[in-house]
Length: 241
Image (tube, rainbow, N blue to C red; front, side):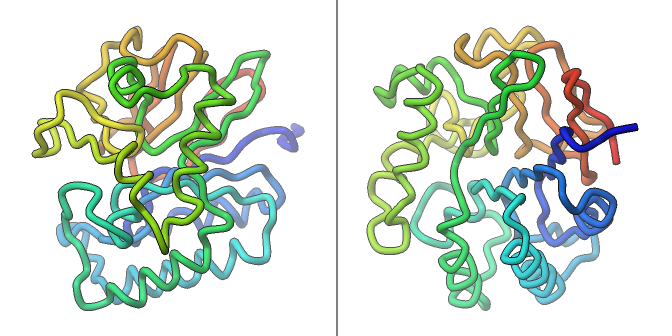
């Protein structure tokens, strides 16, 4: 079977190593990481040092593979400025992590899209909510929205103010005070299965951020944060790797 046009999707890493098998199986595939590369969960038995080693290996791999796209999540952004609640933040290795992230910034974005089965598939760390678009004063035209989000982190290492303004919306589900989350903070509990809270210019939304097991896959959106990689087929089907 021909998998050449399929897209490999990697949800939150947090020191986990599931990404390795996926890139070994599909080394040339269009591969999208959905963000959050460090700050492991202690309950999973991954130490900060182990996670940091995994981060180095992942970024070294990306440097030699132009087919890999890196998105940023709330944990990654917090190493540049205060983007909201810092959970499991690695104080000891802050400088090292920020340096590694800064080196990869030219390869990182907040969002990206692909056309699959004639539909616009929107990839981000969290879903793009109607209420956030209205409050942030950004366009819901998808190409314009993607540009606005990605331009906001172009100078992240020197001036994160624009990104903070756009993305520091931490919802109550995440211990914040915002009535809804941004595309790096929105929680899956803010959505119905029909995804009416997601802007209607997006045909299908793929994100992570909120841990689910099994993954939640609906006709309008998919939360894949389930500690495994996925293959998105050209028929818009998500298959566990």
